[in-house]
Image 1 (cartoon, one colour):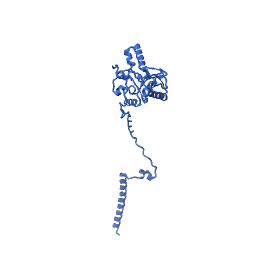
Image 2 (spheres, rainbow, N blue to C red):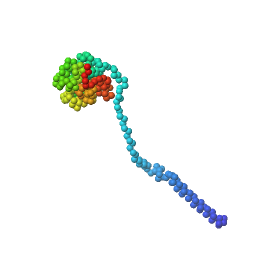
Image 3 (cartoon, helix red, strand yellow):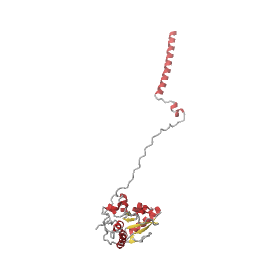
Image 4 (cartoon, one colour):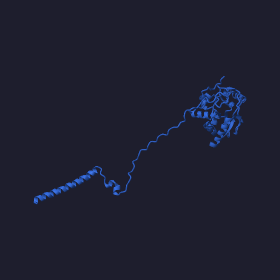
Length: 280
């Protein structure tokens, strides 16, 4: 081989070697540029311990408001005609200044004296007595409260004396605001009970509403079939001043219906006349 040829071959080999090295470098740089993984980027492959990346702070998820639960406006299928509101023997009877009892000298047939405390020992209807005993027992068990019966059934003749006495002391105009005329009184039906606290406090007075007994009765009497008959805000409807001690038995189904619908008077519920003036 000639000397010139040898030099040419060596030059070509050197160039090829240089070109191969350059290609390797380019390939390596290309892999890094395109996200090629290295041992440092894969600690499990390199034997380095795996470290969980820190969590990014997240914005708190806004809480959803709880739905408001309200009682249904009317119990489906409640029949307002299931009992008479005219018959004085019915637990739904409506007696007021515009609606006298018929007959006016009506006397209940099933008057009893339940085993409760009395201020004036007066009887009441059997169904009322059973419910009253249960209500007094619940008040004692649930709130440690004691109650007594201030008054209950009054006959027509008894109501004559009560009304005339009120008129003599206060005049007829004032008497008509807080005492029923004979033949118009719920007490004559045997379904009404005046309740007082034990020990006595605010008996037959508006402040009874602020006693523990008055507050408990106002909140719970419906459970036992009683209605606070003369609310403070319904004087034009009932015709009588606020009497937080006067509870009228109407039975659990009707009491529950009134409580559920928020209706507080029998006049409004049954759509019958009431008011402050006596009818004929």
